[in-house]
Image 1 (spheres, one colour):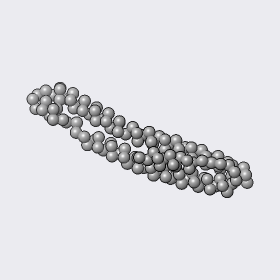
Image 2: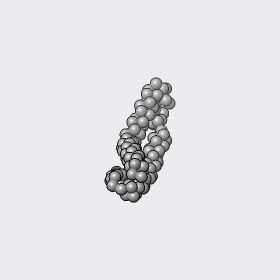
Image 3: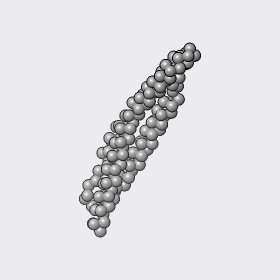
Image 4: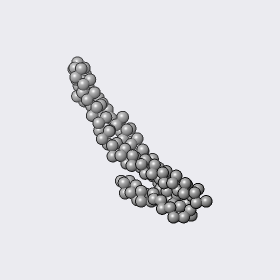
Amino acid sequence: MDIQRIQEINSQITLVLDNSKSVKLQVKQINLAQKQLRIIKKEINAVIQTINQNANQSHADSVISVGLDIFGKRKWAGTVRSETRRQIEREKIDARQPYLEIKDSIDRLMLEGDRLKLIAEEYILNEV
């Protein structure tokens, strides 16, 4: 999905301290890469939100639990409903996990970009 785009952006987050003009250009490149990462992260957040909404719309009342309710087996019906809710929650967590890992890698890249920008600022200040 976005993993290849993230890897391409990762290769753009570099810094070579050669001269101040070049360093300023590299900082602009890092800023652009971070903007791209923010957009990807927003897309991922939208996917996660969709997963959450779909899980919330799943009905915990199965045909079996309704039938058990009708025939007076309320305790069993409650057990079936609670197990169904747990299953829906497990599926939601499993569906979100890959996206959460991608978000974590984006956050690490954003922090790396910020760290490199600080190094660049120090270099430019010391060169003047």
